[in-house]
Length: 331
Ligand SMILES: NC(=O)c1ccc[n+]([C@@H]2O[C@H](COP(=O)([O-])OP(=O)(O)OC[C@H]3O[C@@H](n4cnc5c(N)ncnc54)[C@H](O)[C@@H]3O)[C@@H](O)[C@H]2O)c1
Image 1: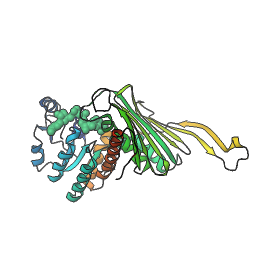
Image 2: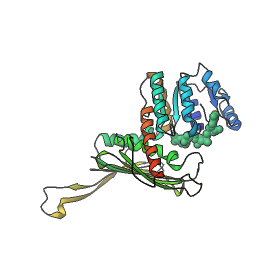
Image 3: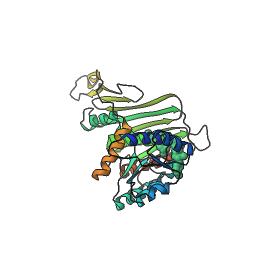
Image 4: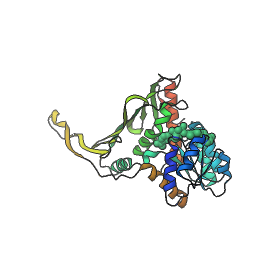
């Protein structure tokens, strides 16, 4: 494990308890973080030198939760040292680097997985089943909000810090990559580091995803709404239980209708709260990584999916820099 900070310590906790894996070594530059690991997990070795992990032949896999700017180099070094890699989001800070990582993992024959946590959330799995099973009809559009007050970062802006999650979910639910992206945002607190971003992904067949990201907002919000031709679904991750609600609402088109007012029929049906279980997404993610390492299967959030997300984020960043101009994702 490299990086035992605010998020990395959750990986430490999870892997320390996961059956079928032994958490061998935790690496961090901060001695206090290492001391905390030693107190809680006395059997785990700690080091401030990443090379110690890379040179340890008994280490089969590396989890990277350090600063985003270091993910690419640390993942490359791990793959070159013949280790499987689970790298936190954002996988890299550019598509060229992400592409290089994918090639490296393919050439080396090692597992490369990206920590797109929400794909392992039971609520997102439920939404995906509703979309793929066509229970909501055609998925027309979705919108999501990931808002908070703090933690204001200085090495990533709000797009790169929060955006990977929502972009990964949008790409996952549509089962496609957007063609163009537009993004508008503003840096109020630190010069050049946007605090709030409004991103729109334009998918084929005029399907849309709109994503609002901010660490400068009065409300902590984690909500995704999907609208289909038959039903609508809201996933609210701030709800302690009942995180998903399926609304049997929509507007039916009746081409045979004689009277104009009967042509578009608004339907207000029931609201269903499905049982989705309470599995912890990070535990599901870490278990999935272990299973893929063991079986050689491709992870759901493999390097290619990570590359797709980075391509979209890079296009969104370019659109931000161009003050909201549409930017194609490929090319
Ligand atoms: N999947 C999620 O839901 C989720 C949530 C939060 C953060 N993250 C991601 O996890 C990563 C870490 O975020 P964080 O909030 O824990 O940040 P953090 O700043 O709290 O922790 C980063 C840690 O990495 C250590 N570190 C940095 N460079 C190092 C090096 N060269 N060698 C050893 N240790 C090094 C730092 O000392 C620090 O303890 C980021 O990429 C972030 O975007 C993911």
